[in-house]
Length: 208
Image 1: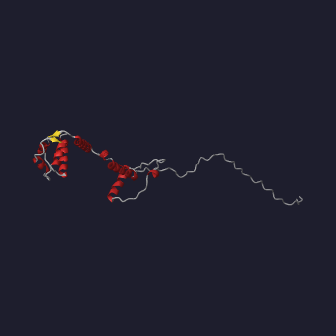
Image 2: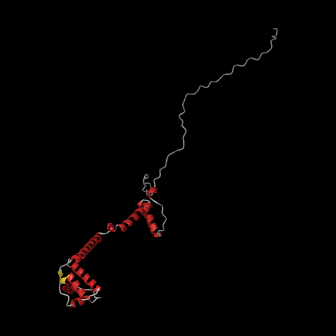
Image 3: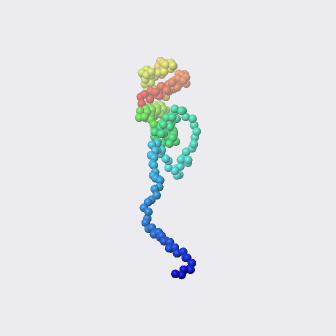
């Protein structure tokens, strides 16, 4: 057989197989885990201070800063009281100073019932004394003055009352005006006249 003189041809390669990846439509159910953001709440055990309201009566408008010396023992007790009561120290100072001023300026407001009763009695006694002064000024009645002198103790640092009782020129009973006139006419001193006046007022006061 005659030889085929056609040149040798390398057989063509089979076309490469293409692989198609189907797009996925699945949704991932996995979720990222974030760090915890939980909040820790602390409860203070310290006493809560009473805060002042601000506004037209703001603290800075009604108070002034002062510097003073205080006994160290009182300072410790004062600070302990402020902590115990749960109030500001300035509030306690306001209260203490206010009470002190009220006690000094209005002592009757802080007096005990017994003190009030004693004051009322003293007022009544002074009122009677004023009444005696007025009675002495207008008194024209006759009194048994010598008899009253004998029955009541008199000051021992003067002999006026002994001289008065022993003086026969002075009657046993008379009005104040009559006694004063006779004392002056008898030459008694101004000191003697003053002692007579006090004794006469005491007599009026004791018989009131």
